[in-house]
Length: 355
Image (cartoon, rainbow, N blue to C red; front, side):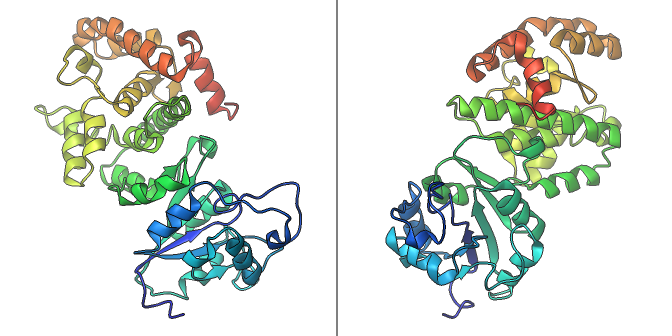
């Protein structure tokens, strides 16, 4: 086939546990197993995406060469949607090695967009991120990314959610968000605060999503990364607070949802219904920010007292926020199914990798 004339978007799928279940009771080439099972939603997803994109398989499977992979896909009715199949038998290296991805790129139009869809964070997502591909994490278990550092660009729980996810406006990637902070001259101390708030916001959003709420953990995390985007530049503007200044920058960069997270994260916005956080992501980032004193996880009491000391001119307004702030924490904990008294301890455990 001519790999340079179809679509300018190449969507690479991992094979085992992304398109077909890797059944632990069997060994050897999957095509020879007594039973093979497609991942739920795989056929409809591939059928829809194949109409306007070139679909390929990129797998680390050691027991199956491309011909055996295709034969297994044929058994579950998926082979007709797949073009090329890449295994370590025919390309250099294995995922997540960069050369594996570069070997695939060389077979296509150099102007193509490459997207990797897979369930393995260490192989599929880290590999795609290192290669500069769009990384889509198929995460049916609602796990958190390792280290609470989501490098991926999109996340789906069900495979049939992929077409809609790809059609949505894109959030900035991890590297893009870091570069925006660098552009705004964010000092190391602020970046440490942002990292801590981002980790807490992401973990809380993961818990809430696992509990069945319609929340986007990646939106919460990127919102937390950028909530203090204009913290430094706004110091020179007495007429605009740093939340509004960050919102202005993010609107200019085509990120309205992130802009609202930044605009609404200031503590005293709780006293103004027009500016208070509304969406789950806005509320989660707001709360995560209030649980951090610098880069240290603290209780609400400790944070309120620290803010009152630091901004003594506004102490009365800060203290007035205590009741609505506690109400917000109560609301979030109820929807995360976590007792309020355990929230900071649970977050601390998550920070230590014990969640």
